[in-house]
Each structure stands twice: as C-alpha cells, then as structure tokens.
Length: 145
Image (cartoon, rainbow, N blue to C red; front, side):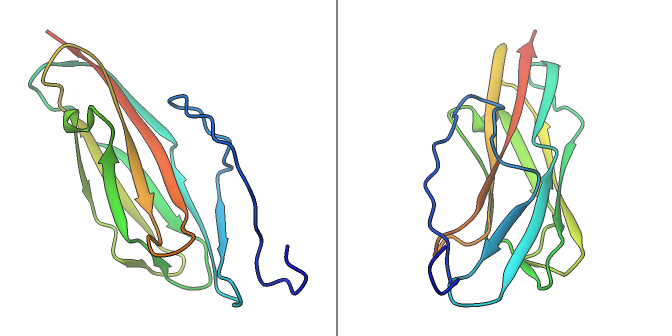
C-alpha cells in the first residue's frame, strides 16, 4: 500500500495448470486515487462437460457474474481463448455495466468437431485500458464418436 493509501502494488506468480487457481471467490478492484471499487464473483470456476458426441452440441452450462459492489460493474469483454476455443460456443446476457446487486449469465456449449479431450478458457475482462481484473474460468470436454 502506498503511504497515502491510494494504491496497492503487488506481484503475482500464476499457476497455469488447467483448472488451478490461487484466486479467492471474490475479486476487489480499487481505482488509484479514488474511492470507487468493485466487488464481484464469477461462479463456478470450471465446467467439465464430459463425453459429447462429435458434431453435436451439449446442453448449455452457465457461469454467473454477480456484482456485490456499490456501483455498476463495467464488463468490457467476454471471450473464449485457447487453441481449442472453436470447440465451444458462448452466449451471454451480460450488459456493459452490470447494475449494483445484479447478476448476469454466460452460457457455454461444447460442440466437438473431432474426438479427444478439448479445453478452453473463458476470459471475463472488466477494464482493458488500465490495471484490469481479468477472471479466467475453464471449460473442458471430450469428443467421442
């Protein structure tokens, strides 16, 4: 914490193993020099779809973003990432600013095009222009014939 209490600087080393996270269930963001802050959760942290027939879509699985802040939560980007991201499809009802105390859903489907284990990360990006929180959740499944 800076001497004037306006910011916190930290260094973190991530464990990049799929499904491993050292983050707690809530993320707190405090803007430099201000009193604005966001408290939010993204649950669950992972969805494992299991076996899914190739070229068929699974039922959707939901991730829920909850805004426990005292102001609207800015949601800038929702995206699937990774070399197998095309094996999954995402839809969402999340607005660009999630109202205080509200929640929104991100639906993900698994649609394997080939057999084998597949995975991707779901990135929920809140402020791409500054020191931004990015929540990473995981989706996985196995394509079968």
